[in-house]
Image: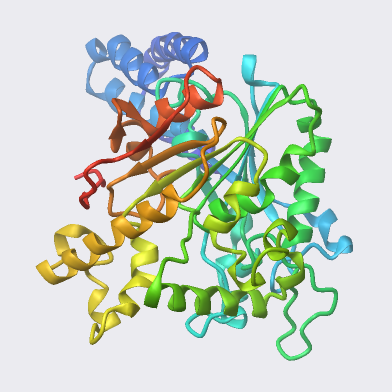
Length: 437
């Protein structure tokens, strides 16, 4: 019995036949409202307005139907078996995967491709061998049954995501650990690992073009964390998939990983040098960067962004929780990294010393970002949040943070559709807890 069979069985246990007909008529009216507005909120309100006078059992039945309806917000993965003969496979050799929600109405000619984040492999604390046994290195651990919630910019509710709610939306699973960049022909004979992230990116794009993306009027490549850095690396290549008449832009959420200065620069360089070596990325990094500097510096966004010709929106927290935990605290003499675990969860669990360390990182991040040359096509939203990832939470998308009286949703929507530019940096910078309490 599937999910929807369970829903109908639950309804049959609650409602008798005559009441069932009245109930369905009320729900039909609510669904018609939903079809017009595509708003889950409208569906809730209209359903309760119609059914509330009909008694307790009707209310329970309404809850069941609404929960069943909300299920469509989560999207199942599709395994791309046709990629295997092309060698486009995850670390462990399993086929890549993506989740797809079809567009509709005036969004049926618009596409949003989202690259999943999840760090990278090749570090002492996360080897590629270990990663190949996890969700981020394989599609062989029940992923085909996993459902991905489409939140924030992927929302299908027009009230929460008015500019992009009815677009074709694609969530690309990240299972290579190399920022969708690696392309090593030989399988690692020691661990039987394949490094083919670049091929995964290519075959997924081919698949989407075949589904109709080549005819898009508007297209966005977006991603968070490692997916945000991947977006910067692939942005111009994504643009090249479309004719000049297509509006194409890129959005990097929490993907602006900085080198910094002094001890932070040494730590950060060592970090990315390991990733580049483990995944054999040196020759695959943008020549616009490698021709001017050490290739080991060419995963730092500060050396990549200015060479991206396609309009790019940079969405960042000045007090990036991941960058502080991964690199910055290692520059603090005598600090025990294990003692930072509680502080890495929220500001409320940080002591005064730890908050002082966090405060020291913000100005470094701001200074690095402000070194970029001016570009009228670039969007910037630098908030004071102590977090990493904005697109994983609809709360952050529509409520907090706010800069220049605009939420992230409003700032990005206005920027994408050229209603207004947006380049705002929070001032003064002071770490804030931006999670819903």
